[in-house]
Image (cartoon, rainbow, N blue to C red):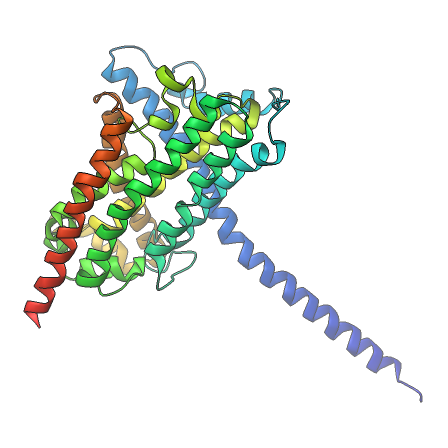
Amino acid sequence: MIIDTTEIQTINSFSRFESLKEVDGIIWILVPIFTLVLGITLGVLVIVWLEREISAGIQQRIGPEYAGPLGMLQALADGTKLLFKENLLPSRGDTRLFSMGPSIAVISILLSYSVIPFSYGLILADLSIGVFLWIAVSSLAPVGLLMSGYGSNNKYSFLGGLRAAAQSISYEIPLTLCVLSISLRLSNSSSTVDIVEAQSKYGFWGWNLWRQPIGFIVFIISSLAECERLPFDLPEAEEELVAGYQTEYSGIKFGLFYVASYLNLLVSSLFVTVLYFGGWNLSIPYIFVPELFDIKKQSKVLGTIIDIFITLGKTYLFLFISIATRWTLPRLRIDQLLNLGWKFLLPISLGNLLLTTSSQLLSL
């Protein structure tokens, strides 16, 4: 059987074309992911700089000022220093758990960013269970901390890991009940895009902040506890546990815990914006900034950029509250922390959910 050379060339060119299409498809999948990771990294660096500047202002001292303009590169300098430090392993600890713990803590929080909408259509994965995916995935982070504490073969580290797990379980339930109140009653969906769209129908007064004030307060307290920020930083209390689960760590693994902490703080602030503050919608009357709305109508790209800045503006407003809280309130005891979660926030969030569902039944 004789095959013409032109047929062979056609087959080869077709196979090359198909392989190029596959490569092109993979690139278009990876580009948004890398863009999101780059944006998150820049956001974390800004949070570190803001925290140092705000804490310096509250304590009436000079913050970072030499590394770059206004000290903005100080966080980058600290990260580079940790990157080149020696990576020490405990001689009698479980090295596999010790090494896997920080990675699990960071990766589980990074996955949560895939369901956050920064503008209409600007979301990595618009899932019907978006909010509950965040709750489910972020609950894996304390598992990484518990692994780190157990693998360190240190009683302070192990106590810190146990505290992280207990604290996460205590405050995840009120957090989930607050999200249920929004997704079941107010937006009839667990998709983050649908929740924002449901708030945009009624403008400024349609924000869930006004329709769920009790849930908003419980959500803020629970999210601060989930982020292990003061006054809820019991897992790494310096006065009691040296540094908690990160006592035996050094180098880049030590830095990963701080990255996980700030990633968690940023994702919690973004979800407060999406769930209670109307997301990317400015929700103010057109008469105040008519030029802004004209730009959004004329150019889709500029409109998307404006939406991103609105989302980030609301997010960093809540971040300021979280940072100011750290330097204002004293740390709780572990029994006070657990009592607050189980005896106060859980009944309040349950009552809020029952009130919300009963009002829905009465309105039918």
